[in-house]
Amino acid sequence: MLPWGIILLINKDFSLGFSILGLYIFVAVVRQIIEPKVVSNNIGIHPIFTLIAMYTGFKIMGVIGLLVGPIFLIILKSIFYNTIEEGLVETILDK
Image (cartoon, rainbow, N blue to C red; front, side, top):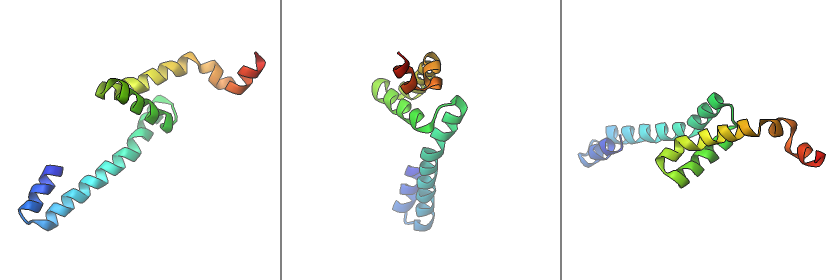
């Protein structure tokens, strides 16, 4: 959509060009806000942790890391499920 809007602006079709660019910005913003929430609801992890896992995975492994990061987080959650459910502080204090 971005090249389409820019080409329209170059061809002096300002109305449609700005409309396409505005739509692109709207879709990008909504996607950035809603996508982590949808992903986190499907995997049962808080959205901020999903975002952190996606970002960390991206930084470590690139684009593939966007998928691997949340999967790794799910694995960690299942491994440490009892500790998380009982509460980390209580678990540390009990030992």
